[in-house]
Amino acid sequence: MQLLKGKHIVLGITGSIAAYKACTLIRLLIKAGAEVQVVITPAGKEFITPLTLSTLTGKPVVSEFFDRRDGSWHSHVDLGQWADLMLVAPASASTIAKMAHGVADNMLITTYLSMKAPVMLAPAMDLDMYAHPATQANLDILRGYGNIVIEAASGELASHLVGKGRMEEPETILRHVIHKLATTNELAGRRILITAGPTYERLDPVRYIGNFSTGKMGLALAEACALRGAEVQLVAGPVQLATFHPNIHRTNVESAQQMYEAATQLFPTCEAAILCAAVADFTPASCADEKIKRKGPISLALEPTHDIAAALGQMKTASQRLVGFALETQNEMGNAREKLTRKNLDLIVLNTLRDEGAGFGHDTNKVTILTPNGQQAFPLKSKAEVAHDIISSLCDILD
Image (tube, helix red, strand yellow):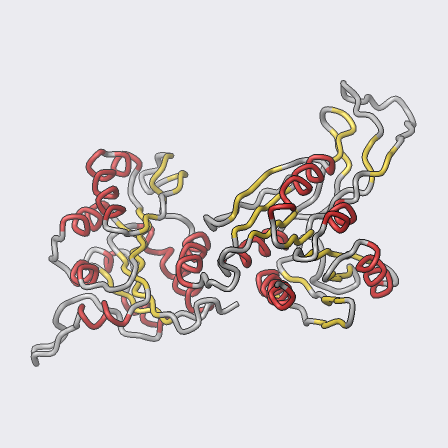
């Protein structure tokens, strides 16, 4: 989804082996709709060529103050006024020190010193350099200037040592950029509850009953709400995905009972809830204290879990809105509309395992949004785009 459409980004590249990641970062930024202008240090050109970068951005790469001997020059002032954001990735220890102390000896630093827009930087260096008090002090200085530091990640470094100093992955950096540039005030002041992921119902200390939900749709909804200015209360089942936006407050749970307790506790303080989690309908009547050994057939007694959607539907006040999900394999529309009424929902999002690319485990989804008075079907889209379609439908019915 082109959340960065119309945005101008100056991408600063410095002398680091992580410069190769800038190619992926550029592609992601452009795919998100941004226009990218690269400014590279002389050392940066030792790691990646201007020709490669220019091919990706469609713009000449800026490196030197003067290109020709005819008096023409690159205006760092113009770049500072053109940009909506300056992103230095990778940011080497040397460039970080120069930014902190205003050592304007190359085009990147003069552009930085002239920048009217917010500045982000993603450090990349060996672990000892990153941990050194001088580097950390320089990063603190930059934070004090209002610059946003995307902390380095841990892993194997160019020295083959393992530690903190790797530039964050381009996908993570893109999320930081989107959060900075794409956040709106549409839901400012609103508090939204979102449930996401599966629940695990324990059989014994090592086994559980669960489902195939990955949490991708629910976390995409949380990010979409936060990008529109909402404070998000996310109740997440056992999923491996991270959340990034500072407006997302996450409560991690495992079982349907834990999700029920968290959701019913949080809902009274929220304007709306989106119940995207794939909550188990049944849980074992008892959980064995020890691992159940394989000694032939066993009988498993199950009992129903709390119906979170129905419980919140009963709690809902006239000013609150409630969105549910229905994943159906038969009589899809009829079952979804019956659930919409029975559980006192305002919207229900129907998806079906019959649609290729929809449902569990995919990065895409194909949904129909039903209201008491109508419905709207959407084509197959990324789950990020689907999330924004759902949030737009919710915004239409919020008081």
